[in-house]
Image 1 (cartoon, rainbow, N blue to C red):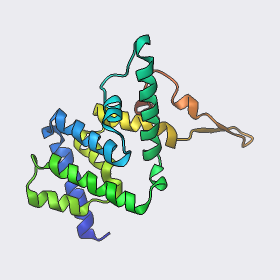
Image 2 (image 1 turned 120 degrees about the horizontal axis):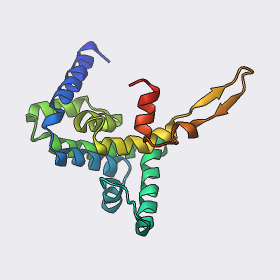
Image 3 (image 1 turned 90 degrees about the vertical axis):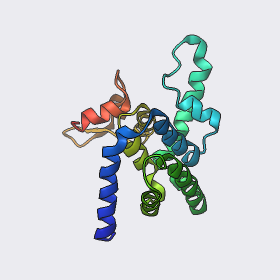
Length: 189
């Protein structure tokens, strides 16, 4: 990547972080909706189930919780490396759909020229970048997506003095905190 392009990426990253607070809750949910609909190919119904602010908690809602779990697995698999399961043509098609949605979301915040620059700099793997930078890393929609894929793509092992390796990933994601909090704690954030 040329220094000029890298400089523009840094410019936009900083600008998105600074402007994140100007995005409405509706904009932030729209970004997540686009990420899920275009990259995971969720139906409107599955997107609504996944993006419900609260998980179903009553015994009567066991079916809803099971549906949520199935959708969460699909989201997790896609963002933990599932792009390997789709063709290059599908990647490009999904990227173009995401960019179309992104332009609509950005239109209330940036000039047409700025939007075209952002679109020109973006690559197919940037959907989560936009989610994190525009909605925020701790926004509930971002956390739901991250909580879906972190347990899938994280391995936590213990090595004893004899060199025996034991997978203890389950301990990392077992407790009162969600996956995002537990990874942040592990990384000292």
